[in-house]
Length: 119
Image (spheres, rainbow, N blue to C red):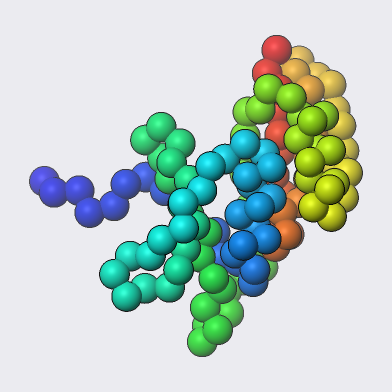
């Protein structure tokens, strides 16, 4: 069977460049490109998974981002929070638990992003 799509998460954004900068501060590396004649997009390869950021389609508004949460394992949440603050992001809630240190923040489009430093 031919595989047409790789596993991916597509985020639609009002400001894709700003959203890509947010995730870059967390440690993702993006390439700018497009599929054929489609809209420009940012893509970060994570092993066998791709995170893509596309412009929000103007002809059809999608529901808000409040019903999703992206969880990312990171080595240094405090450093990342400082970087995100320099981009205008609000400091998130810090929680130390059995799973390690976690920090909950929101990306520029309002999606929850949980940064976890596993123990």
